[in-house]
Length: 380
Image 1: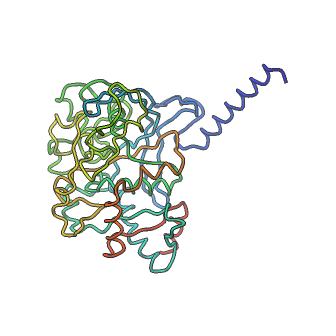
Image 2: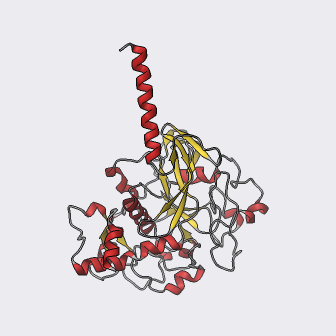
Image 3: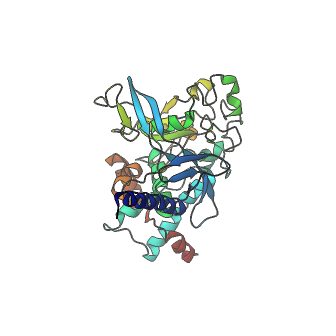
């Protein structure tokens, strides 16, 4: 075959592969839509799409975030972060979504009683922990637990386990964003104090903040979104990201160009960790793109009567400020590399979870896979 024909055939095969990938991947289409936002990639066009949590009627919407370069401040260093495309939750994870995860404790307990879907050394990689029942639900739900309000009071470990649950259930890789990814998505192409500009007088159009909703979180997606269609990036629930609050001492060089994953300050101690965007009781100056809250597990679990305290829940006023949203990278890493985004990053966290489950009977452990919804249905 002449070289020109070989090249043409190769191009045709590449185009066909891209079309096939787009047709089989939620949130990807082969051609740019006539209406609505889209992000062009070598795999097709990323578009906004809706996920349904398998086995439920609960849905959540994912919004495309284009790749690009972001100047990110990490401690006293400025990094040039190359951000790869991803989808991000249109809103914070709501109670409608999170309560489905909370219900797994009872489900896994029933499986244990019946000797079904046992966790073993061979399949433990597909297991998650489900949070213990709330010690005092009225306290946790004091700031609201309507289905369309953001879920709050969970630890970072619980949020990460949630992302593992939704990933293994759906067959698509979800995780928490890094701090650089979160800021990049919040900015939505802007270079101002807030995603919409510098005037804090406009913040009330975009955010629930400074106790605007009578000491409660606001219903999600009722304020204005940023330019990329993301709601409540300022205020409402402050949002977990992957990073430790303290930049690593032997970290990246000032001015280095790195990927968003390379820019993550992976935690080496329990706290402080980073929570972004400000919350429903934050002042305007604490709801900027670069604002951060630093976690403090000892203080935030001060009302927990258990020793050790829950690895899944905070029990304090400050804990009621904390929620999260998920992202789904366009490029899915190998399964072996996904665990670091989901699992406890310190032995003491996993040890506390195991002790609560195995010795105290609080919380549960169980397998998650696409067959889980059918197995739950068979229990009923």
